[in-house]
Image (cartoon, rainbow, N blue to C red; front, side, top):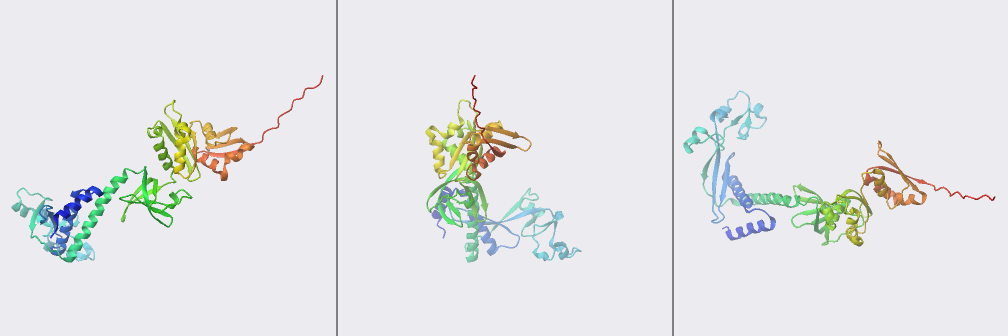
Length: 395
């Protein structure tokens, strides 16, 4: 006997905890019962439906037949005398194995278990029309056997997975492009698997900040850049090295960025080492750089702390490429910038003592500046001329 109280309790729990609608669960149960019935007692081509009453535990089975026009179908005995051999019309497959619903030039092959002729349907249901369904009650069966019970179980599990996939996709699809938090589950081949509650997230090796270490059970914040559906379930792709992660962190710290008053125009990032951010303001009274830095640097310091001490240069974005390139190469002082608009190339002149600062360690400062501005940058040093000493000739 089915314990209806337990069934109801489980359905309500799944609805509350996993967000799977009770109606979907009932649909899964009925589909499983219909599949089990057909496997045990049904015939080829039959359409069987089940109606399960959650209050009484009773199940009613019915067979559905589709109304067809006699002139639009080939009857079985007619099909067998067609001049063409079945192998030629249908391939090597035997005619009796041909699906009853398969069409050939718009003609349907009649199967009495699947179809009912229009003239017969009208005797049962007045006003019956082609393509309508006619329902016939079937004998109720309580014992489907071990195989059928297993089939029913598999169908229910599959339906549950499908329903949960839809639910999880709906929940995390809305969070794509945002920062999410989860717990480290395990580490495998450089990848970190993070438990998000209803789904598993993957922080790939290339998406991690170099040098960071992760421990099982540790809480981790990351940028959700993709929600992927696979046969095994829903996988969330996370990143801590993505430039957008930096942007979302500043949105959390600076209200001016969140409300759109201050806009992050460009980001160049080498995760774990250094980043450059170009910002602008739609309000002339608001300093865009100051908004990200915060009072006494508290905002930028908080972001740097989340990124393991990654250095962040914040500059004001400019439509003037010369000024933009100058600021992007900070903290170096620039003497002159020559622009080639055709090749989108800039030749930058700096004093000898500023060259190493402009290029940066391993070329990082120049590389980030080029990425931030979108210009190719060549840096040349200019030797300072010795001052000319003026002497006053004696009279």
